[in-house]
Length: 133
Image (tube, rainbow, N blue to C red; front, side):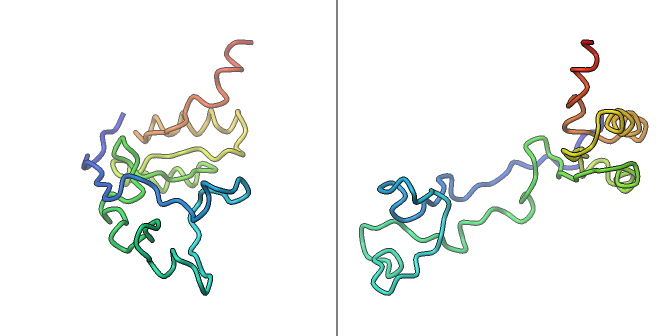
């Protein structure tokens, strides 16, 4: 298995997620962030004691953005040609087989990835059921 080129610790500036205004009051208002746009909104006007609006500084570090905990970046693979793209980048990217790839093609992709020394994040998916039968 290839090791990542650089295993840097991910820096998260803001550990707690910003919740949507009034998501704790109403069930119909989901927690995912939406910018308040009302003309009289206390949150938009940033009154004291209200939830804080997310700022540009709360983003993650550019060098570690989208990086998985194992040190690789995810690259979705649907066929063999996609896998060949990772041949020279096998220490930076890890292949992830797309959800709509059949078990037979999946087996071929995993086998080819082993030959090219490419890490596959979901290599065991859909293979366990066929081995048991």
